[in-house]
Length: 295
Image (cartoon, rainbow, N blue to C red):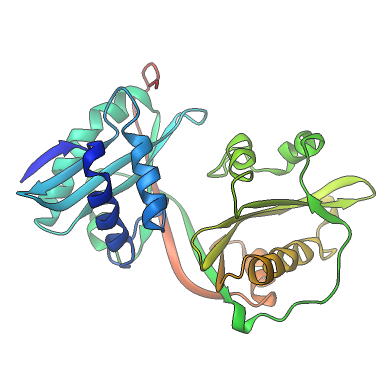
């Protein structure tokens, strides 16, 4: 076995391997893109930094492991794509971790990783390295064949504009996995939408939607101003997003996640037709912070 930095000439091979891995619940790692082309772009970005942010485990010409480091500079943290392994389990995972650890320790304060409960190898890895569980989320899904639209056109919902950004910053959680600026940037990409609900001219709630693949979308965030909750704003935003997903983007399914103790939100999503499909466990480890990485 050899552990080497990811090279540009290997991107297609590694992207296809990662796509196959993340399709399996017992290997699934959160934050990894779903579509092979998107995975290619995601890991290509990791080759554009001065220091290595992705490592591949090889057995002759066969990929048997991978670990990528997604940097989030504003939050002083990184998220792990992996570690993945198909052979020699713990040995591969530990070798990848050893290669990546110094870079993480030098440049970030926290490292995070998330996976399905079925990914026993990764759960064991988090225990060995004293990661702390900080979140458990249920993922729910609704399919186009099961969706019944409200048939009500809500004129209070419109796409977020630049003049809404100040109000939006007050609604967007500071601990969200996308910062406000990241969400705003991502919302400009094809297939992604950021809608706001206006009440008497003021932003009372918002919803951010992403097209994940050609068949699946995700409602990443839906938040409502506390003083205007229980007025159906969240329901209206979700229904608007589902109509757009199924009738404009022609998607087959939409997912949404909720923390396990947020019973109110979970009840709302189920009333909208979502059903639970799996649970993601998220872990973090505190690191030593040093001067930052740069392009």
